[in-house]
Length: 271
DNA sequence: CCATATACCTGGCAGC
DNA sequence: TGCTGCCAGGTATATG
Image (cartoon, rainbow, N blue to C red):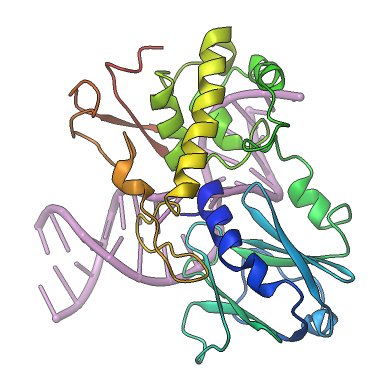
């Protein structure tokens, strides 16, 4: 579920409320994708200074390190003054003086990992090869073009890989390619300069719009305040197999690339 | 270096 | 009602 917009919406929904909170306890439930890496007591007494995002990771900066959180495919966070008993799929409670941050994740592809700093292991391994942040000035067209030029894989899969640009997952990859009229199967390196420029703009546009809409709630995504997103209602192609293209009326096609579904309009996305 | 397949885990749904 | 198989927002890892 959570691509860049959902992670950013989640961050915005609790970052200011948790800032300055002191950790009084950390409870871990069933194993997640990776172990925390230290005893939960290491975090007790530390203050949450701020919450940042890198790609699809949330970084909770604390006095003596950083807690990395990832929502995997099915994760969500909730931050509230108090929390009831943990449910079947609640796997982390960060108890603080300002509230409890709870990770809910049925599939447990998410993670909570402690690192001395983002430049040390294990954070370095997780964050070290990430590509450019699409919603910052660092996402330069020239660098984007250079990154794509080296790749012979289909553009959709290069976007998903996250080592050129981060945060574009399965929904927004299909959406951005639709907006820029690019066929998802085209080799990244074959895209013309103007086409890459259009894609560069489309990525920023679709991600920013999705953040505005509170993300996409395909199934059960909610922010840390419990709000659902609305972007799925205005998706152009994702999940619209067989339905008429909103631009030209042609039936939307669904194909499989790298074991993931891809959606596109065969008429609008010629190349 | 690059591309692709696999694995992780659970729930929901279509079909029988 | 219950079973089976398939599908789902991600990404580290192994393999070619």
